[in-house]
Amino acid sequence: MATPVLVGLGSNIGASVDVLDQALAGLEALSGPGFRASSLWRTSPVDCPPGSRDFVNAVALLVVDSTGPEGLLKDLKAMERHFGRDAAPVRNAPRELDLDLLLFGNEERRSEKLTLPHPRAHARRFVMVPAAEVAPDWVWPGVDRSISDIAGSLVTDERLHRLRRAAAFMGMKGSDR
Image 1 (cartoon, rainbow, N blue to C red):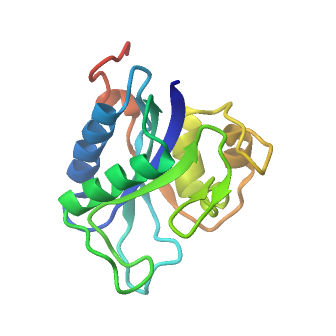
Image 2: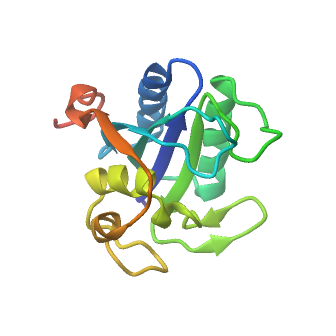
């Protein structure tokens, strides 16, 4: 059975735009038809160590058939390692690539390794604004509001600047764009 999945992407070390482009291609390879990616956004760091650089963020909508959330999480962690990410000694430390499993269908679960939906994503503009580009009508489990409604109502001091619209790098496998 095909399950829609949202994955958040972020990078603030190295050539972040190139890293996200490559990571999006990798995520598309994990997806069946229906893959979509948001624009790339330059965003201010949130809950990061002092002096952290701005991030480049995006959100991808994947459609997966067989892997459960734990299997997909394992694939995401492997992709992070491929791009040079190690276990950070400081929470929210700068990183080459951060991939967060935001939603896996409408599943809600809490385990030592995985919480669904992502517990802080719905309160962060750097996640919800790009998510609204790819899944505006998806109702966030536990909040019971659409992603576009959440994104439009968030009041934070986060700074977001669109670097590139989604159409500039979309049109990959299985795409009708």
